[in-house]
Image 1 (cartoon, rainbow, N blue to C red):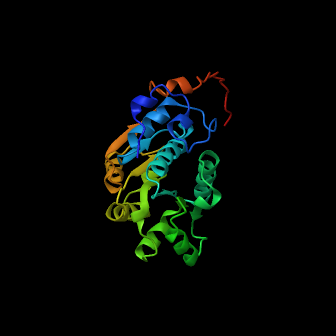
Image 2 (image 1 turned 90 degrees about the vertical axis):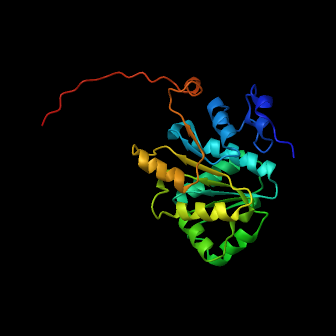
Image 3 (image 1 turned 45 degrees about the horizontal axis):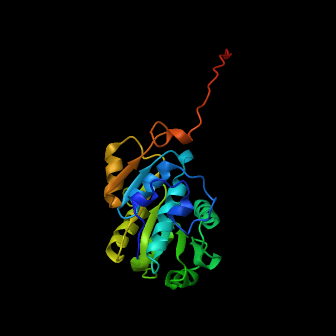
Length: 235
């Protein structure tokens, strides 16, 4: 199967040109998002960027690549809470050319029988889930991750100690034929040992870090005019 090369797309200004699975005009093109996604397609990557810079868009770009280039495989997106899971599912559905029966959510509200049916249904290409449910279904053999070619961890800084992310990552690397992990966080913390733990626990091979000062980010950030007003506070 033909995979587009970086050279072919270096002059593009549309995400639809990069992946036919993305609706035209559905996203504003930002070079740094494409640059980060390009580096995360085939290598386990931890993305550290402020929330306002669009972590979800990067996740969508990498997912579109995985779904298009591995058409018999699936994508699993894990977020710590059900509201986040639902939010991600809506974001992905609004941008990607997938039918409603090709994506679904799996949370604590989903009954075990229904979860088993979802995990066994390979026509469901995109699954959005909470970590405890995924870990429990792996332990109870309701789920095998061999059919998943991309696993996305949102708020990846949680992947320390016995948090569910660490157990899921281990199982995924063991079970998947083509395991690629995309981990994302806006707040990794200042403790380098903790960040190293996250990288170790999620089998991270590449780090992509951006701030609003980076060259490929600056064109998309509006400068903020600060007008200081001094007031006296009465005690």
